[in-house]
Length: 126
Image (cartoon, rainbow, N blue to C red; front, side, top):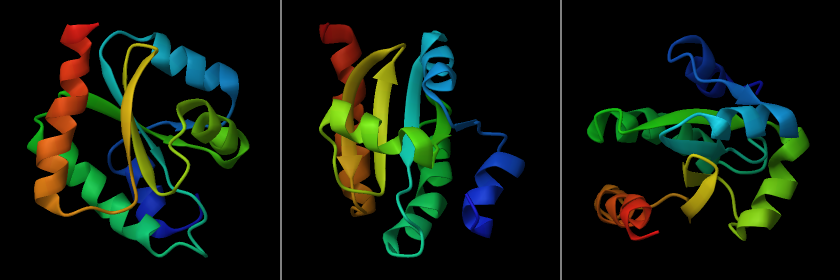
């Protein structure tokens, strides 16, 4: 998490960085809806910085309906594989430890506003 826009998420917003499987498990064990941000390689993927700006805006637009955390490099590949959301940057949504769905790559704002409620609605269907 070396770029200032990623650092801002932890310093200004207080979002945790999940660096190990036990950090991930502890975070997802908390009740409620969670959004995990998998940034990918900021040096190779210019969309990562866009995602770092978009996610706080999405959190605000959804009035804190979900909490947010960053996924560290050490567990990123395993989490991408487990969720089958392989491209980065990506936002993975969970209800507790139940994976609901993910959005990979940067999208139009209206796409986020349409897709996130659909993903979050999966909590009531399960």
